[in-house]
Image (cartoon, rainbow, N blue to C red):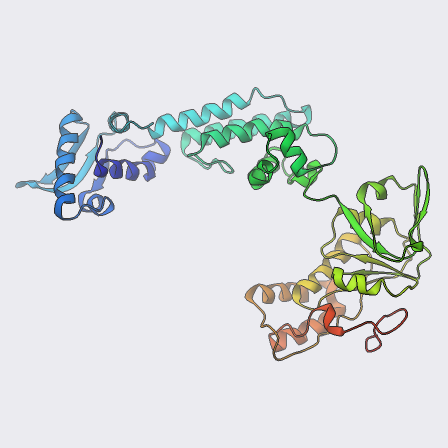
Length: 407
């Protein structure tokens, strides 16, 4: 059995430039004291054993592994040297391990074998280029992100999954697709970040997420309340007849031949708790619950009448104002903030570094000019105040604008 000190020497070799890349024409040299320290063999029995093991390995290596000693004292070791030409092959064979060179080549061959995979014609060039680049990086010691060099089985699994994902048709839940593709309902989620990074590289950003493939964690839907009529191929639904909130799926919004409303305005509401409280007041306002809007929400907002007045009621911390910015920018609508004045409270949480960075970005954004007073007031006191929507209290009016103390 190979000694601990020799395994430690091999670990240093793997992490070295020549070990990672295979490039170099000089012997690999490691300071003897550093090796002993790394192997936890600086004194006592461990030190004696390390010296014996090194001397034995030097003898067995037939000149491939040598010890550089003091010119006048051969017992005083300065460095351990591995011959460049054939030392690596001997060392890792002696340890019963694959050499870094063999592992680089094996990884490159995985990417070259993937070239034979069947992918949709639209992605064929991107797939080939991506595989070639990864094969080259494997051999040269370059980055193989989103893969790792020490897990070939997962690399092979991802290379098998990607063509099947590129061929996926229609919208499905991620867990369903995972069962179909992996035989495990959670496996796609485990690999999601790596698969999405690969998809982005292969398609030059055209596909950068599972969402782009139609794979979602939960169905795309939007929670609404109020006067909204959907004309579908099989008839018309008047959602204004319902007392509580109702969920519309993205598919229903997309399949509607016409979407109309007699509402006087549309109010997007950040928090679901506040949304449900407002639904108790039957009004001529169309309520839509949303934080950062998903695709179903955006699709519905785009299909509402262009002259319908839009308002947003959200939390008044930096994230709450950022949701307002996001809604404005992604819908292109002139959405007015309502009930979003800064409400100070000396006992409230201080702004974090992340909050301060976001505040500065919001203040620099032209779309947030109308909210600059509230943003600056928060920035001045360096705290969030009573930022939650629920802090305003109970709605006390039958209709718009719901809160008597606010405009």
